[in-house]
Amino acid sequence: MYLKTIHLRQFRNYQDQKVNFNAAKTILVGNNAQGKSNLLEAVELLATLRSHRMARDRDLVQEGEAIAQIHATLERDTGTSDLCLTLRRQGRRSVALNGESLRRQMDFLGVLNAVQFSSLDLDLVRGGPEGRRHWLDTLLIQLEPVYAHILQQYHQVLRQRNAFFKKKLETLHTASLQSELALWDAQLATAGTRVIRRRDRAIQRLAPIATAWHASISGSTEILQVKYSPNIPLEHNNLEEVQAAFLTKIQQRSVAELHQGTTLVGPHRDEIELTINQTPARQYGSQGQQRTLVLALKLAELQLIEEVVGEPPILLLDDVLAELDPSRQNQLLDAIQDRFQTLITTTHLSSFDSQWLKSSQILAVNLGEISSPDELY
Ligand SMILES: Nc1ncnc2c1ncn2[C@@H]1O[C@H](COP(=O)(O)OP(=O)(O)OP(=O)(O)O)[C@@H](O)[C@H]1O
Ligand SMILES: [Mg+2]
Image (cartoon, rainbow, N blue to C red; front, side, top):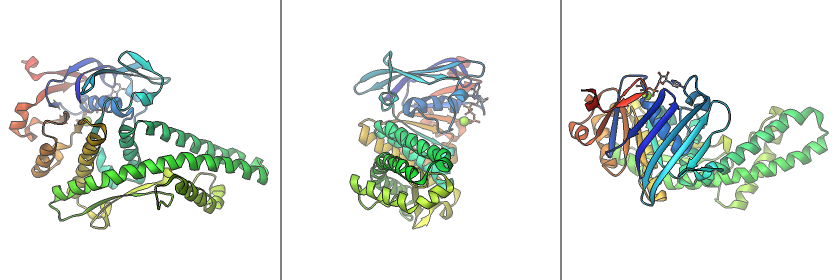
């Protein structure tokens, strides 16, 4: 797939900026705080309706404005699509595809696919499980957009069950408390099982690809394992069995849940284990080794999305190329070649291979304005 144009209005530090992409690779060059990452964030939002910076909509809308708009034209094998996302300082976002507004955000997901790789991704190795769950969920949303709905349903039940604990605990008689709680348990298990099964399937597909990439980049001396470690014991990915295991675990933890007044069981407590040579990657590696791991994960994402969707997704490289040593840079560049449209941000063009620079479109980013350097002379 190929992103032809993007038009940002009142988005972050962009007042009204149109960009036409005209090569397989576009390098966005500029000093710090000019708007390079903001542009990649806009593409990421179109792909996932999420920002890995965890920004709220009101942070995305330009200061002093009420509405922001991201408008893009995308070429796919199936034809050209016109995507539009409207963000509001107050109120809900809205999405439109080919000029028609969509009621369900789910129908917007899956039109544009992108893999984002920034220095924040190092937190996948160093940070807590929440970041890894968020990463896996964002990938799943692109692999199967219905997952966005499934995840939302789970979080809704989780919120309601937690609110029930908070409000009802003192006021309810034990017997009626138990029967109402049983209803919430059943709903949590049903919604949670959907999440667990899909996460499990995604990791099963992703893990061998990531391991292979990692072996190739690290020269086979290190073995990466990516393992889904669900909060609910998972022996088989069978609907009834997972649901039963879910309910059993709720029962086991019921005293603790009542005591702590919150839900302690379910996929909001899942972990995705990353180990190198059987050692947790967090403890194992040097910074360079951790970077290699994240690079392997990103290449695996790229490949898996391509396999599932049937077209190469867009790759967003935010300031990471310069952080990789030359051999890993080349591994990455060899892997993407010209097959994946790639948007790259950097503060210095000097870190790039000259061959590369020649075949790339270069855009200068300066205080929320984008220009071709030729236009500057
Ligand atoms: N809602 C907003 N309204 C106006 N300006 C904003 C808004 N959100 C962010 N900015 C501005 O955008 C700029 C940061 O842009 P961005 O993160 O894209 O920088 P960058 O070019 O990637 O820099 P770096 O090289 O440091 O990564 C900051 O100056 C920030 O104040
Ligand atoms: Mg940046």
